[in-house]
Structures are given as C-alpha cells and as structure tokens.
Length: 277
Image (tube, rainbow, N blue to C red; front, side):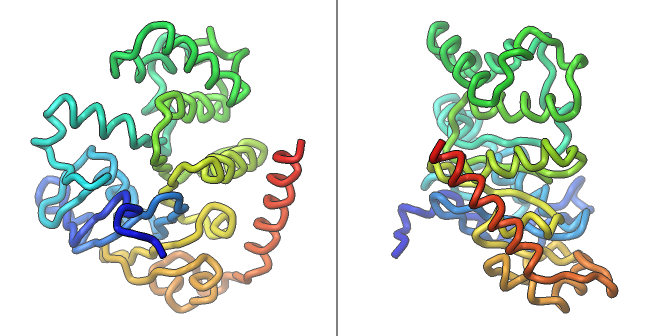
C-alpha cells in the first residue's frame, strides 16, 4: 500500500484566476505519488497547463494549498534561497513551446545554465552536460545556436536542459504537440524509460491516442476548470459521454480501446527490446 511519504505533490482545493478575474482553476485537488505517470486531460483553456504552473511554483493559488515533498510551496518560501534551490532541483518543467525554454548562445551553454545557477562545481557541470548530450543523442548539436535547430532538435535540447538537473519529477505540457511522427515516438519512448528509471511524470495533454503509453492514471478537466473524472486510461476512454461533455471528442469520433492497446503493445515491445539490447 502507498504511504503518505509517497505523496510527492499534493494540490488541495486550489483556485486560481489570471489578473484576478479570468478563472483558470476552480477548487482543484490532486495528489501525485512517487513513480506515477499522471495525465491531465482537457480541452484547450480548461486549466491543465495552469495546474502544471502551480506544481512548478510559477504561479501561486488564490486559495487552497500546494505541498511538494512535504513542504508548502508559497511565494515567500521560494524567496528563501535554500528552499528555492531544493525545490527547483527536484521538479523540472518541459514547456509546450521549446522556444520559450531554449535561449542560450549554444546548446552546450543551454545545458550548463541550470547547474551553474545551482552553484555546482565546474567539473561536475561539464560531466553532467556531457552525459546528458550523449543520453539524448545530441552530441553533434553541442556547439550549435538554438536558431540553427529544427523543431525536433529544439525539443530534445529543451528536455536535455531539464534532465541535466536530474529532477525527481518531470512536468510536460502537451509533450507530443506539433512534433513530427519520429520525434513524437522518440519522446514517448523516452518518457516511458525515464519513468522506469524512477522519475515521476505529470503531463498535460488532449492527445487521447498516447494515453495508454504515457499515463497510469488520468484526471479529466471540464471547461469550467474543475476535475470531473479520474481513472486509468482504458476506463476513461470508455467514458464516451464524459469525453463529449468536456469537449475532448466530438459527436462522430470513433474512439476505441484498440488504439490505446496497439500503442501500448508496440511501445512495450520496443522498450523491452531496448532494455535487452
């Protein structure tokens, strides 16, 4: 049985409005346990990306509380340098738009940016950067400027700039959006492998086809910014009326479990082959 110590992230009854008047979250609660893959599902504008920002300490609840690793995350607490470094080192956020994340003069400098800010020794930074470049197979991009990268390459660099920090929790906002099929498949395999290596994954998506691979548990947002459903991917994909109500599918969608099964089966086979090789 999971214990309270396994509850890494606890969002309790959180509401948030942009500029004090555009509601994004309405009394949302969520607990993420160690080692889980959790998907936040919903139509555009439902609040799932805002919830990721709360979990990353980028915005703060108007009401309700958010605790990470046993401590409340507030604006005041994050102003404490020790708390900030501890929290930032344990949670990494991969944005939907890589251009918002990749800004250093070269890929190598991009990867070194986070560890430098954490005050790590120079030789450790160089070792981490080298290891991460190799892990994501982007050694050949190390001296390139971000503007010289393709969309898929930029996504790899954005992910590398987070993984170099070795966080416990990885947050992905619409991870497979606007990627070519090969990069999309690579990223799905990477997320599975990272989770198998012990990383806790939280992702926001409206891509139902990838759920069986990318999530153990899903939470469904309504367009009223509330969580209205929760369950395993197969359970929620069978809830056609719920998916219609929250505008995740339209009346004539043909959604059936075979899609999810085929994705899972194909990826499981690939991951097993990768591990064996």
